[in-house]
Image (cartoon, rainbow, N blue to C red; front, side):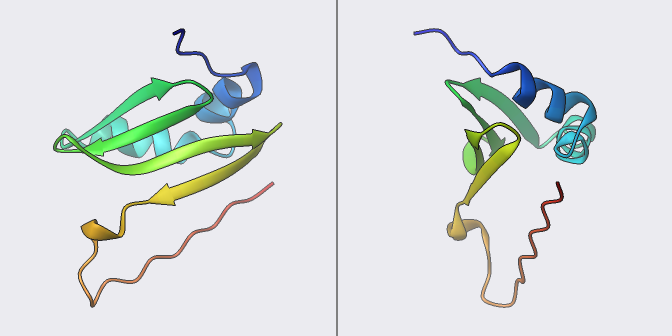
Length: 81
């Protein structure tokens, strides 16, 4: 199975609204980003912590593994158009 992202997904990762996520992963040696079919997975020390799924042109769904949170953690998600 090919691991492909749409052109708009790639553009958003490189220079668009997802760019800051990619830059953050590139700077953190405990994180790894892997391409899957129509989505990317971000791994923390081998565990899949976040999945970004393309749901439409420049529209994404984020699946975060809650097992990586402690009870005192707060998660804020901001997605801009």
